[in-house]
Each structure stands twice: as structure tokens, then as C-alpha cells.
Length: 630
Image 1 (cartoon, helix red, strand yellow):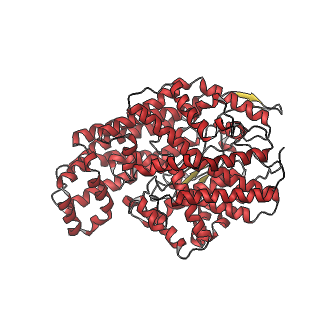
Image 2: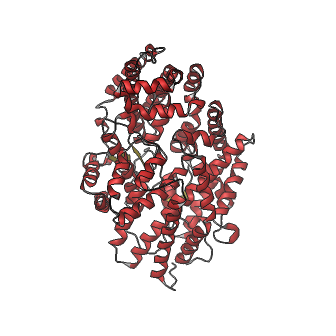
Image 3: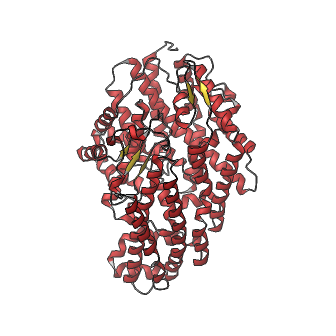
């Protein structure tokens, strides 16, 4: 369940599924039509209503300690406490989501940053007040709690909470110690908060003048856009300028990241885990072997990745493939753009295999303004889905700029939204939050169905090649790149756990070694400019405590599930929708196994590699012996 002690963690999970960097041409928010802005009034009609709700949260929180010492007196008392905590947590999710999304509309706005800070400080106090509950329930003992479950059937909805609590008993501290950890949450989260504000609002991003004479400021969204330029000289200029600018602040970035890593280590050691990795994975009962097997499997299959890189080099007509070429289009002349309405229709049509009820909710997301579509000055970059407002509906933040990648991003975020929608409308609040391990399954599943639909409905040779390469780019960006990040994240935690420093030069060396191995630099596959070694400073996910590996594991799971759905396997749609509706009613590995995917085996990964090679076979069949080039 979303217990108060861990509410900050679950808010992070609910809102920050990803910070996908997407293209964005910014305008003033006031110039954007209302229908393209999310409707936060569905949460609270005004800021004043938010304030009243927040004050009620603080007042209700004062009642928490009235249950202290009483949880073992009867099943009824234990149920009443859990229901009280659940309702309080649900309202906390609501007040946090409203203030956070208001802030994301314009990260420069001090008012909403102030609201978030005030709430975060209150949550630390609330967490400290509720810190007695887990130790007290553990002291009651599993035998007595099991009897309570028999005496009061209402407690059965908290079965997974009890199961997790007793499973993790060795890592639950005394009331006093839990209180200290809860109060420390604001401090432990500070490096990530500082990084977010610095990179989104205050980093002095450089400007460049491109070959067409246009001068652009290379903030994150413009960098993302400009690195896709078909003009190689522009790409190289953009890369050199951006990474040189990032390098000027690498010492500050390194201190932020080192502080975050030390926070993870502090929490793991305080809770008696052997490592930060074990601590991060144990909350959802994920074996450490799943993480390490992913890294091992990817390294064993770098030959497939290098095949992709060589194919990209050939299709671009290059003598030498450079890292700055990785985001450029490989097929000249494919410059289609899409309106948001066209994108909506494409995604809805692509989801036809999942049935009308699924498609109807997708249409509601558009018509009922669940989506904040276009970029604007000060708006948070990237894209995410927030499904944590249980009694309302999920929300999506985009920075839509009309390219196919934006359509794919929208499909991705709608996958998260549908997962949240089905879980929230099927499960009680305490079981509605699905784990981060499965969070990316629905999103990448949607991307796979969209790609299959668009390719099947494309007859132009160049368009089809472009779309197939876009699919391969998905494998690159999700399976290989995210595992590359996961390996870096594991390495820096292991070094810090061994007492080694993490200086900016040291981080550059670690990241550069992994980057060069993945891209086959020593084998002549792809040339890496040393200035790119600072790319670690650009990745916000390194502050999320072993999050990124789940993009890759979820990707392999979704590829296996999508293949079953597209092949029309009997009963698979029902199993998949049941998976989306299951929330946290079981452990994630079990939920996926029930849906038809065993993540403790190599089969999902092997199927993903087979699918990637199949796409490359198809591309090579289309281009034959010809050279494309520019």
C-alpha cells in the first residue's frame, strides 16, 4: 500500500515516469488554445481550494499519533488506522500533484515552488509522526495479524502491505530510527531537487549560429531538436557547444550526483541492506539477479547493437559514424509533420487490437483535457504521465512539436495513463499504485503497436525505411542506452560503497569507458569525441535510485506481449488488460508471469533481440545492395 512513511517515494513514482527529451519550439502559454492545456481545475478549482485541502491534511495528520500503542488491540482498530492513513495519503497525493503540475507549467514561478517546498516539509513531519506504525505492527507479530485478517475481512485489501512489511522485517527499524529517517527525507531528496531547478531554470545554456544563419539557445529541448539536423556540420557544432558548456559545470554536477549516491547508500546501510541496489529493488521484491542479468545480456549482444550502428552508417552514406550522428534522420526527404489531432487519431487507431473500451478512454484523454500539449516559455521540458490523483484521472505533460517522435512519445505516455486509469478504477487506493518495475511495460507496448500500425499503413519506400529505423532507434534508446545508464549507475554506487570518490573526472572516465564499449569505439564502429563523456551530467534519471534499468526490462516484456497481441494469441488481450488493472495486488514479477512473460528467464530479452534483427533484415531487404547516403 502507499503507506505514509513512503509517500514521498510513491509521489515520485506517480509523477516522474520519465523526463523524455522531446523537440520543443516555445511560445508564451497565453497564446496556446485552452483545449491544448490540461485542466487542473478537476483537482482543485482554485489555489485557495488547494490551500484549504493542504490545511486539512495537516490537521488530519495531527490525529495519527492518537493510534500509537493501540494497533494490536483489535482487528477493528488496526483497520481504522490503515483506512485513516490511506485516506490521508490519497489527499497528500492530490495536493502534491496539483502544486507540482502547476509548477511544471512555468518552472520560473516562485509561488508553486514555494507550495511544493512547504508541502515537502510537512510530509517529512507527517512521516515522522507515522513512523511508529510499521514497527508496532511488526511487534504485533504475523500470527496475530493473520488472525486479524480472519476476524475482519475488510483488512484483506491490505494483504500485500502486510506481506511486504513482514517480508522486509529485517530492514524495518525502531520507531525512533524510522522517525529520524522520515525527517531526513527532505535532505536526502535535496540533490535531485537542486539538479532539477538548476538544469530547467537557471543553467546558462549556450547559443549557436547554424548554417542557415539562425541563432538558437541550446536549452535541453532545443539541443534535442538541433541534434536531429540533417546537416552534419550543424550537428557537430551543436554537440561540441552543448557538451563544452555542460563541462564547465561538471564539478557542480558531480557534487550533486555524489551527494545523491551517498544518500542512497545511507538509506541502504541504515536499513541493513548489503548494497544500494538491493535496497532499491527490494521494495518490490525484485531479485538483484534481474538487474545484473540485464547488463550481462546486453553486453553479450553488443554485436546486434553494432549491426544497427553499421546499418545506420551505411544508410547515411558515411565513411565514419560519429556519436553526433546518432539522432539524425537516416532517410533524406522524410519530413512529415503531424497536428495533434492527427496524432490522436493515429494512436487511437493503432490501439484497435485492445478493443473499443480501451480506445474510448484514449479519446476521453483528449476531449476532457487530460493533456498539456505544447511547449511554452518556462514549461518543464520532456514528457511524463501522472496517475497519482486517484479520484480524478491521469494527466500527461508533453512538449509536442509535430514530428513522428512526438506522436510516439504521446503513445508512450498514454500507455502510462491507461495503466493508471485501469488500476485506479479497478483497485482500491491502497492497491492502485503499480510498481516502477512494470511502469514502462504499458508505455513501450503502446509504442510497439503504433509502430506496427504506421508501418503497415505506409507504402512509400523512404517513409517505410524511416519508420523502421525509428523502431530500431527505440531499441537503441530503450534497451541499449538505458542499460548503458544502468551499468553506469551500478558502477558509481559500487565505487562509492567501496569508499572511492566520485569526482567529475572520475565520472567522466567511468561513463566514457562504458560509452565507448557499447558503441564499439575501439572496434571502429562509432567514433566518440571525449567531450561527450560528460553526458552523465545531462541525465536526470540518475537521481531516481536505480530507475532506468526498468525501461529496458519493461521494454523486453512489452515486446513479448505486443508480439502475442499482434499475432492474435487467444486470451492475450484479456490477460494484458487484467495486468493493467492489477495495480499492486501481487509482486511485479508474478503479475508479468500471469500476463505471459517470465522476467526471471532470458526469454523476453532473447525475443527482443530477435525482433530487432528481424527489423534489420527487413530494412536490408528493402535497400538491397544500394547505397542511400545524402
